Amino acid sequence: MRFSRADFIAVVLVAFLAYVFIEFLLYVSPEQFLANFLDSTYIYALCLSLATATIASIVAFPLSVFLGYFLSREDFVTKGFLEVVFMIPYSIPPISLGSLLLLFFTISKVGVFIERIFSVLFSFKALLIVHFILSFSVMVFFIKNAFTSISKEFEDFARILGYGRIRSLLIILIPMMRNQLLYAYIMGFMRAFTDFGASIMVAGAIISKTATLPSYIYIAINSGDIDQGLIATLTTVVISMTIISILQYRAHEKYNKSNIFS
Image (spheres, helix red, strand yellow):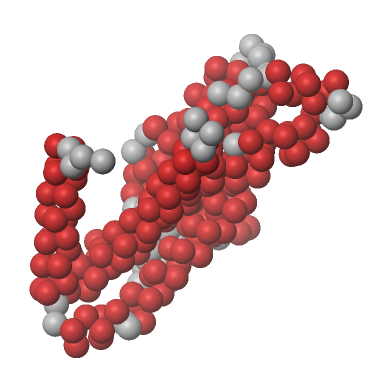
């Protein structure tokens, strides 16, 4: 295979990114890097982001699968309205979503009642709620489109064989689109993991309590602690690159298998 112009551009881009990444690493001495990396507040922020994003995305995933399937297969008068409602958290700025939630828990009678009982604001529960909403909206968007791309003939054939609707979904459709579902889940997880605006509005950025990794980066840079902010930033880059690489590998693996007999 000949080395093309696209390959040349890719090599130049990778070399530039590697240079920037290495320059960032050299900015911090090894001793300072290790000290900041083992800092308890940094570890707490990282673990908090991973925990809330994981819990929220796991809870949101099955709900988004069934809702995405429902929206892709059913036609009813208010379908367009429901799709718009579920897409709002995905399409508006996160800080707007956080503001709406903050106002709900402080102005709305229902929200004030919930806040009085459960003390949601500026707590771990607030992070779970906002991360659930963000990941759920992203997953519904991707999963609904994935179901739409699959012909209904598969389900019709399954019903001829005696499969019910739920059984055909679980046994036939979901295995067919497992890569799309994996992609939707990871996108939902990353949406929650990388959120800053919505989280800081409803949970604040209290160190060692509600400060997630993005909030921690903001606090570190804003306070002049460039070393710590840089390490936290590089952490998000490494996690994102790892997840994207997994998705790319899965996509290429699927493509290669589909072309074995071509």
